[in-house]
Length: 278
Image 1 (cartoon, one colour):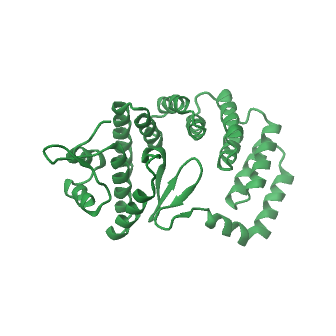
Image 2 (cartoon, rainbow, N blue to C red):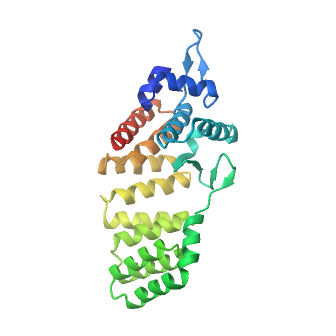
Image 3 (cartoon, rainbow, N blue to C red):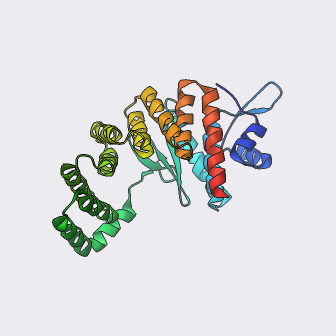
């Protein structure tokens, strides 16, 4: 496995060398040392440090960053490398997602979309009636599709699924309805159906980058790593500006032992996220 020096890590992540060393001292990462005593970082360390930088950019207090990252490191079992999970930042929170669940390392609690649920409950009487009126008045696949979007906005997932299915029934060539229904079925852990819907969307529009990326994610969640890499590579070809595709490729290449490709895509991910922050 390729190792990275302190200076290489700092350059890749856009951090000061002093900040990297500070995070080492705090225990966020514990790199190995070579015979000369120099720190040697793994790709897993890069992921942890990238998360720390995201929290710093979000103005999260240093003590909170250290606590969150230490909790994350403690909770990862030895048989599940950090590269096998997705680490995301939601405001001032660290959210970890694997193929089975999402959780917050600090609280160890499973993450649910309470904000959307509460919104749906508060506005349900009026909002659901509005959606139902839209569904009843729908005269085309596009009308049904937009009713599905409105349903999602209020957290009415079942209504959204029904609207997208009706849109597909009205127009079997409606690519966006296939993609959105696939996404909802993916979230519901109906991975086989989600894959089928994404593949149908790509039959309709082979150059649709979102459908290609989503298919890669569902294949990854189903354990089809080689196929997921193939789809992510095609997504990069279609739109090389999507940072998440490069990050997912970096993770999978790291898992499969292609460290050179992992570094190449991680570097591209870093460049894209740095450009987006400017």
